[in-house]
Structures are given as C-alpha cells and as structure tokens.
Picture 1 (cartoon, rainbow over the protein chains, first blue to last red):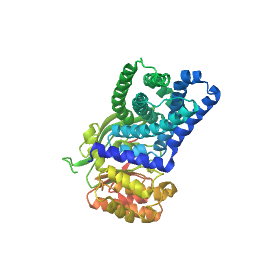
Picture 2 (cartoon, each protein chain N blue to C red):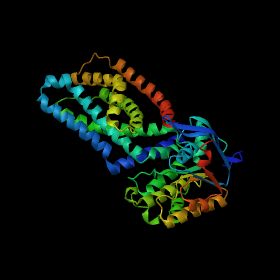
Picture 3 (tube, rainbow over the protein chains, first blue to last red):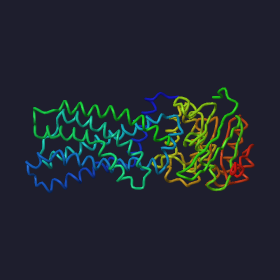
Length: 224
Length: 218
C-alpha cells in the first residue's frame, strides 16, 4: 500500500485538475466575493469613517458567503457522481479524503482572498496588506476549510444543501470569525496595542481542536 | 493475498434496515476462493444492500462481515481488504470531468499499481475502450461508462470482485466480454460476487446461486 503523503498528493492533484477543467469553485468564490464588496462599496460612497469601522465586516462577510456557496459546488459533484463511494472502497483512509478536500479548498480560498482583498483595498481605499493579516488569514483559512469540508460532505446528501451548510458552518466557525475580524480591524485602524497574540492563540487552538475532531468524526460519519 | 481463511467472504447473521423498513433479516452466507456467486431476487429484496455490506460500503445494524478472513472494523485490515477487492455498482463512480485515461490513471495510482500505462492499455483492449481513452467520461454513453467502471474495478486484479447487476446498460458484446472476464477470473481461482436479474448471465457466470426469496421467511 502507498504511504499517506503519496495518496494525499494524488487526491489533491485530482481535485486541482478537475478545478482547472471546470473552474467552478474558484470562479464562484471570486465572483460572489467581488459582487458583495462591490455592492457595499456603492452604498458606503467611499466614506473613510464607514470603511474603517465596517471594512473588516464587509470583507469577511463576502468571503464567508462566497465560500459557503463555493463549498456546496465543490462537494456536489462528489455526491452526484458517487465518486466519494468509489474512494471509500479504495485503500484510502477516510481522514485523507477530508485532508485533501480541506487543502484544496484552502488553496482556492487563499487565491480568492488575494483577489478580493486587492480589489477591496482599491474600492474602500484601505491599506490591509500586512504580515499580521496574512498570518491571520492562514489560520482562519485552515479552520474554515476543515470545518467547511466536513459539513460540505455531510450536507451534500441533503436536498437543501446550501441552507444546511450555512446553518451548520457559521455558528461553529464563530470563534475564528471573531479572530479574523478583530485582526483585520487592527490592521485597518493601524492599532498597535491590540490583543493579536491572544486572538492568534484562540485561532490556532480552534484549528488544532477541529482538525483532530473532524478527522476522527469524518470516518465515523462516512461509515454510517 | 490469500490469508489463512478458506472462506473468502463470511456474512454472519446480518440485519439491515432503512429507517423502519427491515431489508435484510438475520442473513448468513459464506463462500470459498474461486467461487462465482450470483445473487437474485426481486426489486427491493436487498441484493444491492448485501453487496454494499459485503464490500464495506454499508455497515450492518447487526451481524459480522469477514472478507478474506479480515474485518472492516479494523482500519488497517479494512485498507488491506480494499486494496485486494474491486467494486462495480449501479452508479459508474467516475469523475465525468476527467478523461477515461485520467480516471483509470487516478485510481491506478491510488491502488499503487506499477506499470500503470501497460495495465490501462491491457484493460482498455479487453473492454474495447482503446478509442475512448482521451474522451471525457461525461461524453460517453452509459454502456461505455459501465465498461470504464469495470476497467477501474479490475485495475488491481482483485481477489474478489463485487458487481451489482454487471450486465445492465451493456450491449450483447459488452455482456459477452463481462461474462468472459468473470469466467476467466474463476478459472484463475479469483472470486466474483454479483447480483443480477438475468438468468442467462447467471447461468453463464456463476457456480453458486443465492435466491433471496429463500431467505424471505427465514
């Protein structure tokens, strides 16, 4: 049997290849994200006070909603074509299916965030690029991708998958959502005396706990 | 991987219900290496459920499943069993966005097969798929998808092949090829376990028959 890293890389390459052909997930992420920030930018009329106070909320609501929609699409094909079943009769540990999905979604989410943030910085006249935010985004994206992939697989069987995924996902990611919004606010307002380290600790703890919990539960749920 | 077990598959007192509908009740079955076992029964009698339980896709509500002397309950054993079995279900279980070759290549790599190209070439010749290798699965007919699904399940030359209605969607030539594959496998001491509605296919490909009607009142 193959080692885990090799199987993981085969699974990741397959998902990236499919995305290159369909371009569905990445396009959905960018399109919906940009649509939301464009609508907000029209309503705020480039008021710097509004942008500073609500910029982080606008940015992350666009990422979260675009992410939820893209995630449904990302898993729908697996369910529709029963390819997940196919992997379950192959010598592939179920955790690797979750990890591969999470890693691929992490990559797509990160690419879309770069695009959304670039456009946002122009539309809202914000200077948001900093090492602090990059670190925050990495921690947030890991947690969001792992929890999202877990619930993405579960909700893909449901007829109302879009609603179910959002209902399950958003309450659970609230801690890392609070972390990333606080970090973005710090960066936008250039606050020096912030609680970044405390928030970062919370974000990393969330990622470790949910990565462990979700990989344990994923196999059990697939079995049933 | 012939482990120390005469029986390739042992199902002991299996029960399975969907919500409140009891589909399989206290069902037991075992057979030896090299057997080709066909399972028949009317629609909804539980043929697919038995196959899915046998290959580890479904967990029974009660009872034991031993495949090649090992249980799916242990992760390590489960992976070992899966590396030596092949599964063809109603659904083709292929990635429609990828070509036939890309699908077979992906599954070959997952199964750790060496000489992937030779293996794919060999199977595509056997199943008359050579002309379709560069075509996306989404553009194939249902019959050809079934052939690709068969090719996928044979990549590792499995010790046991599970097939749910293997002849469905196939034309006469396809049915002939599949029955030849089943018989060749049996001659080589490999096991087939399949469900079917076709008595002709059953007669051609099985040396043991299980009629679920016999278990209805058991």
